[in-house]
Length: 466
Image 1: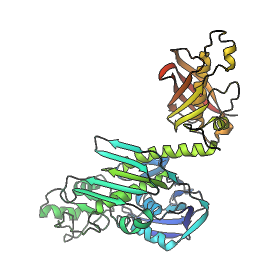
Image 2 (image 1 turned 30 degrees about the horizontal axis):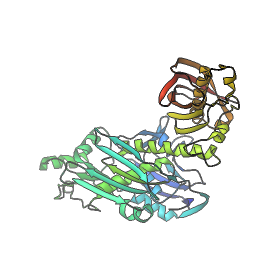
Image 3 (image 1 turned 30 degrees about the vertical axis):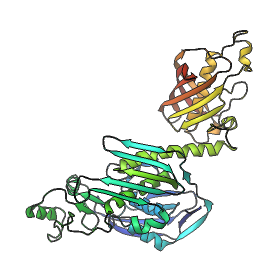
Image 4 (image 1 turned 180 degrees about the vertical axis):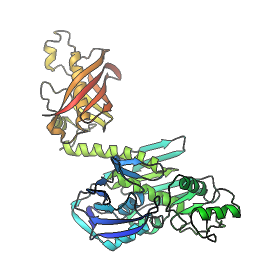
């Protein structure tokens, strides 16, 4: 895979009808500077608002992937994103004069072809790959969805679907190299749907631009000649085109690949993986998944990426074994210093969810001099303070320029001390985020020694400038 970022050489456009509105729409791909990422720009709206193509801006994933900011949306972006990701384009402004790109033939190939005509420019800035080091899983037992992400030296995908329909049945595909296989083996795979889905969507005012030229429609029930004529009228098609093919596909359309449906599912997955905002080095295995599951998985992978970013920003030297952030990194985040810095390392952090810190309690602690002579016990208020400091790291991670901020605690409730903390103990402090607003939060902290809880409390804090 490319080691430097790249964009396109010149602006190129492609027009066509939108799948859902049926209206003519145009997409223009514009070159962009390094580290811009992929951004959609609604040029049909005053001030031309931009929507970053990242997981934080996904507002709907029921039938396709829709991005939005406020009440400004753009839907069905997955084929455009798949084309950009498959062509290894890191930076591009995608101008759209409507709320959806043209559907083309239902695949990513029209976008790939126009991007190839634009040409590519390598940029003087390195790519920031996300290399998966530990297995990540997602499953939905009710829907039979399973997804697993393994370490790999490049992006690989294995996909399996099994439909209760004789025209599809069980299908499987694998992509071993994005660079070598995407354009020929996956970009041409067209979207598909079952007939009952088409009728339902059309009756709900959607897919007004859908026809047999931009989708593979699989017939999943018996149809009489009268019903075929009704379908032709509903979709404004010639009667002779709406026939039931021997392959179970409406109109008898021939597939581009014997397993085209599962290849298109892989294409959709590639487009949804682009929402990470960074090239992925991993092997993704998916069974029976769709956009909703893909988005859920990307959110889990995104947490890994944000953890990597945090470590890269503050951990300037190799961290001690078992530490995500050691004491040198913690001092870059927290303003506390001896004798009031009460956290030695962070061993885990899930952005906006949980942080786990360690405090080693030794006989050399200054407070043991007077608390109590001959019977040293760590003051409970300092255990709570240690939890607050660990929680501050979780809170400060969620704001910009955390090294310029400080967390002020506004309230502490439900404090309970269950066992004394003695010299030689190691505190494992777990803080979970309960509620996060713009600059404030509510957290619950629990402190353990040898898996026994010694203290718990709810804490409220606000972020202020130092």
